[in-house]
Amino acid sequence: MLVTKQPIFKRFWYPVLPINLLTDGNPQQFTLLGEKIVIWRDAQGNPAAVKNRCCHRSAELSLGKVTDGCIQCPYHGWRFDRMGNCTHVPQLQAGMISPSYKVSAYGCTERYGYVWVCMGEPLCDIPNIPEATDANYRLIPEFYETWKCAGLRVMENEFDTAHPTFVHTTTFGSEEHPTPDRMELQESEWGIEFWSTLGVTNPQLQQENLKLATNKTVRTMHMTWYMPFTAQLRIGYPNGLVHIVVNTAVPIDDSSSQIVQFCLRNDTEADTKAESVISFDRAVTLEDKAILETTDFDVPLDISKEQHMMTDKPGILMRRKFLALLRAYGEVEQTHSS
Image (cartoon, rainbow, N blue to C red; front, side, top):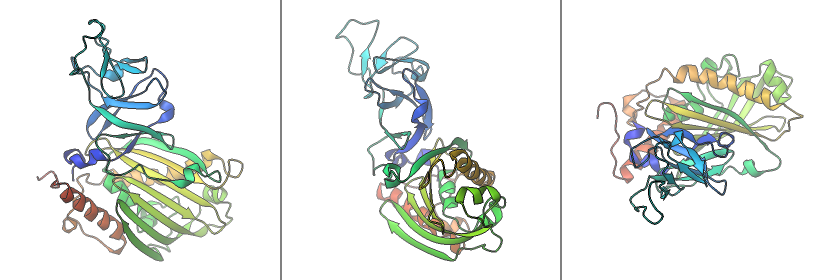
């Protein structure tokens, strides 16, 4: 499946940028589903996003500046508001601006410390994560980087409980537990719920992070997949600690994803320093990245195109839900061979 060839993906929300990168008067650019967009703060301080092409002579608006809450083109000074309307043309007198002077505007809002963008009429809301507003939890931004792989591969990997033994050899994988002790799967309208229990190891850093003086423990996991490319992994430990990882593979194009990850924990900085939490999770994701970047980004939704095993059930259901979504909106899966 080639995401840029499937219009339906423009109707989902994606966290494209950490909000702290969006300073006043400083526009940022991002490529979402193969299309360049520019993001800035409007006069009210809210994030705004439009296509990164001026309708006059196609200059990139991200090279301009923010003036009176509008993005100003660096070429001839035309200004556009958050709705894409041209509000000022220096070369014209007031009242002479044509309503056709307009650029494509997108849904844009802030949530969980990130700018979220939707390029069409949203099919569903931004994932609801109650712990993000729970005073008993702290939110720790972790990673924001580009991976050369498909978002669906990342999502399947998050729910794959058979790979830790072989991929996460320096972090938590256990040779004694190549398969989980429990797997329970439930489908929802816009995703899936997955419960699993897996025996894992604890290197020294993780023992300190978890306050568990043992090199072996059990992860009780509740995973939620939000279509199309957001996964929430809630990990419970025997001492009551809860570590929640939220990971989104934002589709830059068919072969690249911007990995946006943050975590939530029911402890404090005095208990475990954020840098230590990030350090361990970083090591885990780098092990995943090394493998995922070798996979084919054109993931087939037809499950007969690849082989499967028992622990692949979540990924199989993801592919089936994507296929059903395409069919429901009159689309056909686009691949290299299409």
